[in-house]
Amino acid sequence: MIKVKIPIFITIIVGIFMIAKFFLNVLWIKAVADELEQWGMIVLAMAIVLGVANILRVNLKTALKKGKDWQYKLVVVISMMGMILVGLWDLAMRGHVSAGSEFQYLFDVIYTPLSATMFALLAFYVASAAFRAFRARNVGAALLLVSGALVMIGRVPLSAAISGYLPKIADWIMAVPNAAGQRGLIIGAAMGVIATGLRIIFGIERPYLRGE
Image (cartoon, rainbow, N blue to C red; front, side):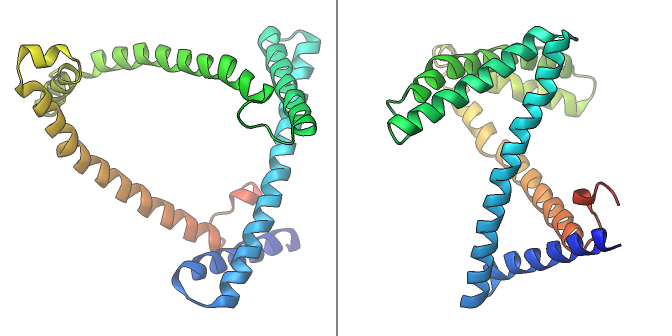
């Protein structure tokens, strides 16, 4: 019971101070909340270290045993350790890992192109999903099809040559109906976050206890 009650008690205290910091203009509450945030940063840093160690343990174990997709796991380990060593080298020699460092160079010439490639590949999956979704089976699907087609056409330079109204229509769809839908989703997501946060603070949900 102590292993359950103590984490719940700590969560309640920390949650109350974090909420009170934004709603009460009391200096000692803000001081305590700021101190708790610093503790949270320390815990986060240790969690990152444990995460790196876990990634190294899982992938290296599979790579050494030549399990499923061991080549990719070996690449993950080599890449991760390589970036860590380069970052530590820059930190020791230059005192930073920002612009002009070898770490930043590797990030720009390796990670950034790979990231761009992944997003370029995602474009084909998005186009495939859009093709399957844009089927006018009912009124809602027909509106989605028409609006999506107008936005895609209005976003390319050729649309202005076809008609000057196409870019304006695309901008109106993005600024009015799309923005209204996004606001509704954001409001719903915010309410869900608030409800989930309160349930965690008051110990109703305990994901940090693995469901206990």
